[in-house]
Structures are given as C-alpha cells and as structure tokens.
Image (cartoon, rainbow, N blue to C red; front, side, top):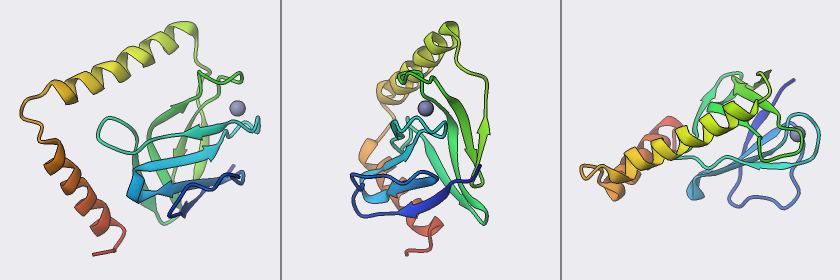
Length: 134
Ligand SMILES: [Zn+2]
C-alpha cells in the first residue's frame, strides 16, 4: 500500500486516503488511518514528535504510527511512501509507548540547555534547506 506526500498551507477538512498531508508551517501532518477505518490520524512534526523525510519514492515518518487511541489499534510505519504493517499494540506496548513519549518530552523540555526558539529556528532552516525552499 502506498502513501504520497502532499504539502498544504492548511489541513483540509476532508482527507483523501493514501495521502500524507503536511502543513510545514504549523509542524503538522495528518492522514487517514491506513487500515481504512476512516480515522483521522494527526502526527505533529518536531523534536519530540515525528520526523518527516521526503525520499524519491515518497515520505518517511519516524517513529512508527501506533493508533492505540483508535478502535482498530493499527500500528504501521510510513517508509519511502509505503505503509509497512507492524504488530498490533498489546496493552503493555501501549503503556510502554506512552511512557516513552512522556520521557522524550520530559528530557527535551527539562533540559536547561535546550534553547527552544533557537532549536525551532534551526529545525525550520533545516526543513527549508531539505525541501529546497531557501
Ligand atoms: Zn484504522
């Protein structure tokens, strides 16, 4: 199964299946759950969220997308424009995933060295260079 990248100024209300929408300016990305259940999956982009790379074959999102808050509990990777199915989350994995997210956020925001504005600007600059906007 394929997914393609579409850059938008604002997130559209209606999402098409098989499209990863990215509103770079807002650090936001969204797509419809790859299982077809119709759930809108939001994956914010940033140092404590997901990272996006564009390859020749399509977008890569890191880390994986675990929709444990959805009824389907789908878990998959988006790699080079492909949906790669992973194991469904077990209850333990859901708990571990939540703990990991909290740890990542805490490590980032608790670090007195972290200059949030500077980091944001560097990241933005990097994105601009990456997408050839500079
Ligand atoms: Zn689903």
